Image (cartoon, rainbow, N blue to C red):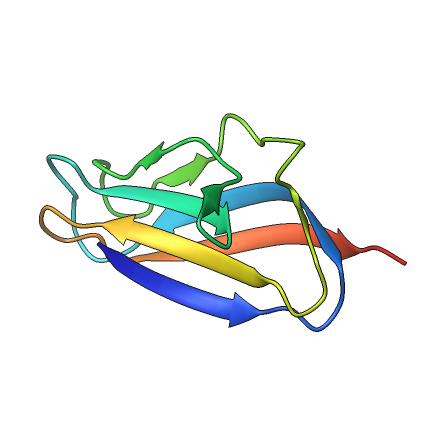
Length: 95
């Protein structure tokens, strides 16, 4: 597994996640999960798709979607082969 962490400066609520596959086709168990720290916000997003395909999260856990100020937005990639992609996380700042 490979994690990419971003520390948020403000409380943020995640509202959508879109992943665009780049560079070739993925196979097997290539997945992306967006997390609040170590707890999943999204379902496991299957990235066993062709180049240029857009995949979005089919669920967002409303009890985990709000990330505290100084909290960690984590993207976890599980790679079987080529999982090269761009992950877009949409949300809004909460007062």
